[in-house]
Image (cartoon, rainbow, N blue to C red; front, top):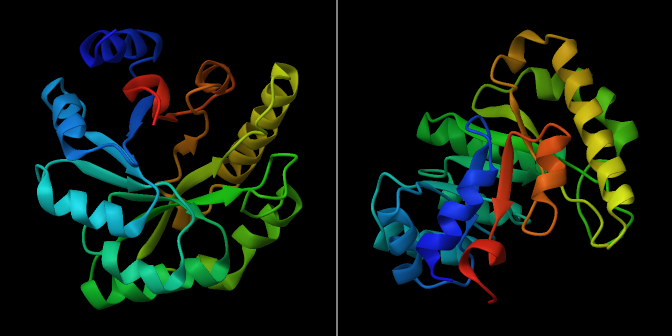
Length: 220
């Protein structure tokens, strides 16, 4: 099946109010351009160096999302153009994004990563840390790092009930934060969960944004 057929098939399974982030890491610019020509505008990259190179080479109306683990010393390279940073996993990283945004006088949309998987290799705040994080003065006083929602990755497992339970945990945290109606969270409306192997479950559990790479572009 070619990209056109795969793209149309996946799009038909995703509700209109759920954003498809086409995860283009390691795929060449020609493949991204092909998806762009089919109408896709939102692409996700894991590595800053690869993202900045593709940003320079491809159409400027692409919305680039950084979805991988971000080191503080790399924030400055994507701060001028990134549309959304998915994996903000610490207050220190959030404050670095705030500082870079202030230098540029640019608000930088972010998602806070929550560690919901039963795996030590995943990053993010633990669910029990979430409430205190959003109540902290440092977070409430941000002016340029805009928190638009939460992001998380389920355990890589064939146990679909476990995956569903982890997504439910994240969705409940999302609703809990949203229900507090913090004035500084006026853009808090995105729940990024679900990848190639589990996006259908994620959508069922309330995801507003799915990150799909190999199911769309084929094996890396």
